[in-house]
Image 1 (cartoon, rainbow, N blue to C red):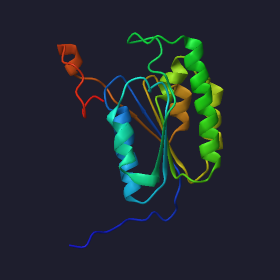
Image 2: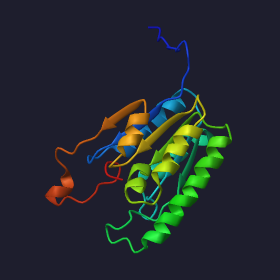
Image 3: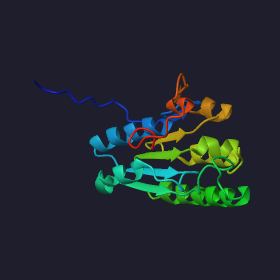
Length: 185
């Protein structure tokens, strides 16, 4: 059986927002990373807020080789789960991540960029709305950009091409089941 490989007549970078209170926003973006690598695309993933607890995607993307550049810039989730760092330190890390985005975006090396948990960072005032909108404005026309995290700002949703909301229906955590490797982290 011959497999058909589609090519759009006009290639165009898309802005995708993955938001909502359900589990799977980062996982969905990692699925798009995997798909992009399957098309031999170069990918940059920058995680906001995550960084104090191990997650399987850190080592999983290493298996994809040089096509994925992965940076976890945060010190965990600001203000929850016993995180000991003050808001000012979380904000400094998020501001550093914005500089990293600028460097990676202007390098011309990447066809897909994932800004994991940037929606949360905006909601928690670790980054400002004008900074996020500036990222959208500066994005190279051919670059795909994925923004994940709860509480996506309405203006970000308005400006994107595709937005999906992940809603929790049921979660094992609510039944006192501990997070499981490979599924929850």
